[in-house]
Length: 303
Image 1 (cartoon, rainbow, N blue to C red):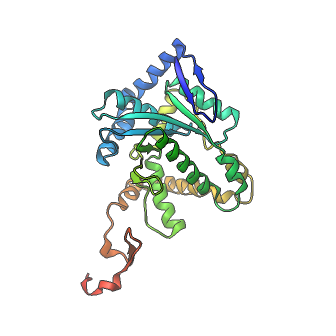
Image 2: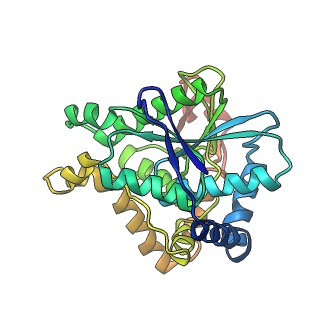
Image 3: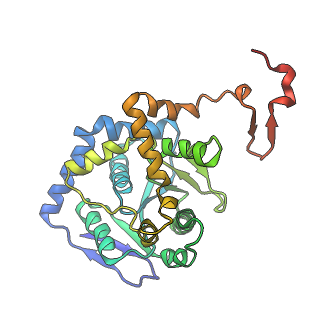
């Protein structure tokens, strides 16, 4: 029996029967992660965990599932790690329903059944709230509200970390977006302490996994996942404000064009924030917000 747990607000427990066909398919999906796509998925997943020290003994991690390909893969990777890994940790597979339509919601439940991920679902009205604040940046507001809701529910469940499904391509796109549209140099960090939820951390275990490899795995297993599923994004895509929600797609396309000219472009973007020379910057800010200018210590600068 596969149990999909719904919180008190939903007031509804759902037990989803798993047939033998689903079990066989789930085993094939798991085998593809460990065998066929081991170098691209499993090895990069464990490398990120070890390199950035994302998991410690005693952790209880809320694996946050949006229903997309990235977070569903992350859930399966965590299942394998909990079975075969060396760390002693617990996992909650957390799904928030921010107002999905019935088709998308059923898609999430169906994939959880096929992949035998024991999800905990809770309800929120985030889409409805953001819909009223459609002016400005709805994607930013939605992301912040969703993360806050996930932190809150994860903490309620006794978790000390939430895991999000951002991958390598999200990282390099963020770096370039910051430069081109934000006038700043920064990256998407592999882990962070929560600002508003004491004792909580955010980790990104797919940090070294390429999106194209996730897509190959998805297609190999004939899996169908939801995309953004946000009605605000759909509405904006048909409006004059389409550019507001397409900047990330625009930068991703730019990176693809650059890769056609040089196969090292993506790796160089990724490494650029690891090879920062402070004495080659006109100015920079420290974590406390203090701004340092090269003229402050110009006597120490030379060719």
